[in-house]
Length: 314
Image (tube, rainbow, N blue to C red; front, side, top):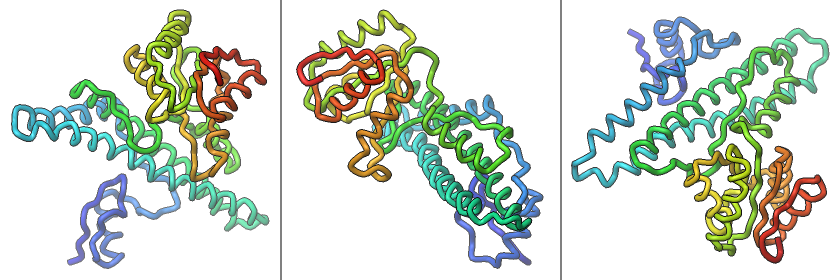
């Protein structure tokens, strides 16, 4: 009798046995009632938000209850962090799938010549891209729900050790054209779902460690704009790290713009500066730093963004 190993509906191709392809196909039909590699979008719904938040919270809480008070309690923080990171890594994988899908759509666009086959293929790629976006957004929700429970259980804010913890706009079925899909994805990547409130950019070098002055400057702006959103480059030390700690302490929303070295090479920090200013912050707090810091301040002034400089070289 043909058998097939049951796999997760989110990742139906991971961990398959070496059974014949027909066995896997029959198993998928029996389990889910659809073909896993069909041209039509997956008809199954995404998990409900409230249920997902409750179930994820319960899982982490159960793990904490199991280890608390035992000799394994010292390992609890790392295990809870890893639970959140599972979702974060899945988001990265889906982002890579989205990149591949976008390239495939662009190739398909250049090959269009009135052929019905080519047209159907482009429609399939567009639908596949929308499905990937929905899955990515769902896993971002899962990660953020798990991160909230991590903070509640450990008292520390969850941060990824690689990449940024970002959220994207949920794109709707109103996107009906491949070019619209690609443009909308780029819009979502560069116009993140920022919390409401005035955006205030911050920059400073890794050698700048004047904690008192940095906190005083941020407190002054925060007093005037209590709903502010802090934008910074996410350096692991120096002025930007101090600013990030201030935001956590004051419960101020923050968005991290890290240079994309893989894509932009040596121009990565300067392109990052452009992306930060594209959000049109109401001002830039600039502490002493490198030429990259100076570049951000100069560009902000040219755009008419007020620059509040603290120290020589800002």
